[in-house]
Image (cartoon, rainbow, N blue to C red; front, side, top):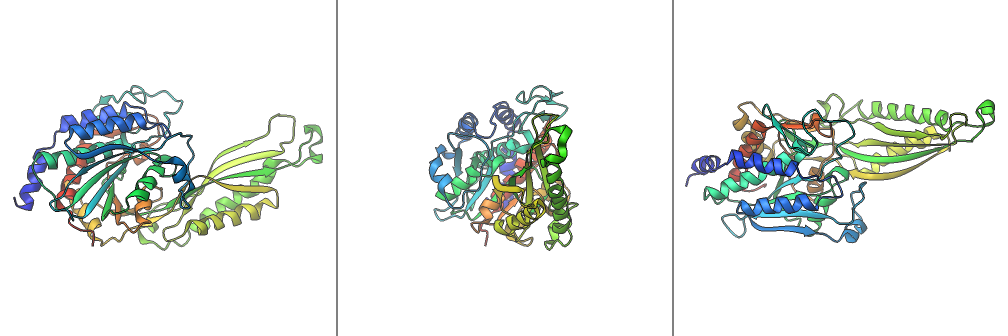
Length: 415
């Protein structure tokens, strides 16, 4: 069968209704980071029905993963770490192995009521499938699964072998992908179907999470001059972090990142201080996120944050690194993988897919750290991720499956 005929046969074998049904089932299964086993078991059952090989829910030695010197950090409580793996074999035993990696953990549902069902209702209205994790990124997993199913059902034997990885813990640092790569780093390339609006992401900023404590001196409010407010001592720290953000974004070396409105944001997302309105607060805790610029190491990024916070804290601030520690990553714009995914997305959408960078962290960097060429490409919706009434457009999910069919049939080597 000619290559063009293989693609057309696989596209014809896509079952749109089954794809949306499987996605709805995934979204309806709560899988907040740290509690992913149920969704992994469901995903494994879906992969078996799709006719994929070697389907397994893999449980990792959590203590060993945490003890690894390159442990990527984590925030959620967990007692186990599980992924799902499934494979479509290639034409030859030595065929290069392409990874399609999608995370199945999601952030919490929040406290604000949803206008479209509940966070787990997976209701479809006006071509939109609502639910936590619909865009970020259960749609990516379902599209990849059904792309593989269609290739197999059409009798097409790709020139590459393909492994579908459904991973845990992406939202708090990438522990699932990290564990999978510790056991088997032998991928020729990887596509991560995060929601990118069908742009091909070749550059990804990293992100590091920090927690700081500002110490003050307590006193009665009526005699506040006898104390030292931890809030007052924090204000110069906050200003220093604003100044750091401005500095990091003044001269951006990477062309794809330089094109973004704010390539490297710095944010303090939580501040807590004091325990009584009539007392000078003697303690303030703050948590935030700082960027890791493309081409910069985690240690370099940490030193910049430490200099800003400790320098402004005048000896009253302690700092520790908490939660996820996302490195940056980049794949060349002219790399064969980049070009293949760009052609596939452009052909399916009918518009030229942009090659771009993003200011957020993802599992892409864990593959790139091991020298595995990796890009991200998926539906739109990153701006709705983690928000109330998160949704994904069903026609975009189908378009993503068609894009991944073209990638699977067209991939031969990442060289």
